[in-house]
Every structure is written in structure tokens, then in C-alpha cells.
Image 1 (cartoon, rainbow, N blue to C red):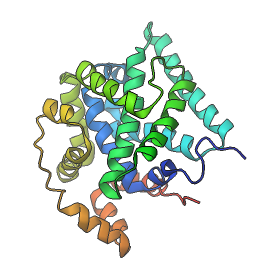
Image 2 (tube, rainbow, N blue to C red; image 1 turned 90 degrees about the horizontal axis):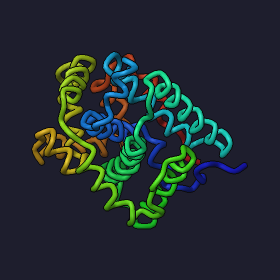
Image 3 (cartoon, helix red, strand yellow; image 1 turned 180 degrees about the vertical axis):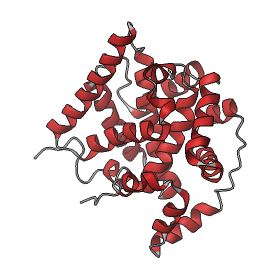
Length: 254
């Protein structure tokens, strides 16, 4: 059986661990709040009503793609495009192609940044592998102007960060919603986690310092995984209503 992502791919390793995915989620939640096209999700009302659930659903689509047979992955990608097409029809105009690319670029960047934070540095070949998986996802969605290789993508990523991000009333509201749904302590943990993986441009716009008090905690967390205490950390730090969804993110990479 042919899979969208080969079973020995590092992409499966990245997307097979809940802690890595949670950092992908954390970084994306910061950057997405700055995106100039974030008003599209305010149009449906789903993002401000349940920002954590909405971001989890986006992550879930990517995870399903990574672990599905080729035909099922294509069906998942096609359904995602159909959902967005329905929103476009309801609003009366199209989501800009650059906005689709921005979301794809976030998945690429935070896949690499989160894995390198928690595991090890990726080789150039492995980064290319990550990029190629999401390149194929974007191509299936019909996105235009996608660079063919990871090195060619890097300058486009920087251009997008400079051109497509701004701090707006949506940014402020989304962070208020994050605080409301997480509570003060968990929200603080989220922000400190975001600092560890977001690009410098995002830090500047959100007025984040370069220091995160989670920096010395990360080695302790890695140790907790060795002695099987990481589940306790997640139980303490994450909302109970998302516990089942978070546990489901752990899959056996085999």
C-alpha cells in the first residue's frame, strides 16, 4: 500500500508525538494571530468561539495526511479545500493564495523548529523531506508559486513573514481568547512556549523577549519522558477537555 508519507520518514516521527505537535500548535497560534488574513476565520465565528479547538482541528488535518494511505490523504486534502471553498462562496470572494501558503509555511517551519527543540537538529536532507511532504499537500490544494526545494523556500518564507503579518485588533482579541480558554497559568506557559519556536519577526510584532523561562525546563521535560513522567506534565499543564485529543496525537511510528 502506498502512503502519502513513507513509513521511515522523519515526518512521521515529528507528527507522531504529542509534545512535538503541541509546540507546532503553540507556534502556529502565535503567528496565525498576526496574519493579515485571520479575519477569514472571524467571518465564520469559529475561531474566536473556540480558538483551541479550531487550531487543533487544523493540526488534525495535517496529522491525518501524514499517516494515511495516499488515496485517503488526497481525500483529506480535497475535503479541506472544499471546506474553504464553501466559506469563500458564503463571503463572496476568494481567500488569497498567499494566505493558504502562509498556513502551509507555518506547518513547515514549526514542524522543523519543534522537533529540533525537543529532539535533535535535522539534516539538510531531512528538512528537504519535511518541505517536500507539505509541498505536495500545497500542490494538491492547487496553491501557486510554491518553490520546488527547501533552500528556495527559505527566502520566500522570510518575504511572507515581512509582508503578511501585522499586529491588529484580531491579534489582541485572539490572545484574550487564548487566556480565557486556558486560564492565566496555562496561558503564560503557552506564551513562553511560543517564544521558543517562533521566528524573530513574530517576536518583534508580539513584543516577545528572546528569553523564555521554559528554556531551562525543556531538558527536564526531556528527562521526564525517559522516566515516563511526561504524561503527568501534560495533565497538569493542559485543559482536561482536550486530554483525549492530546493523547490521540501519540501514534506508533512503525
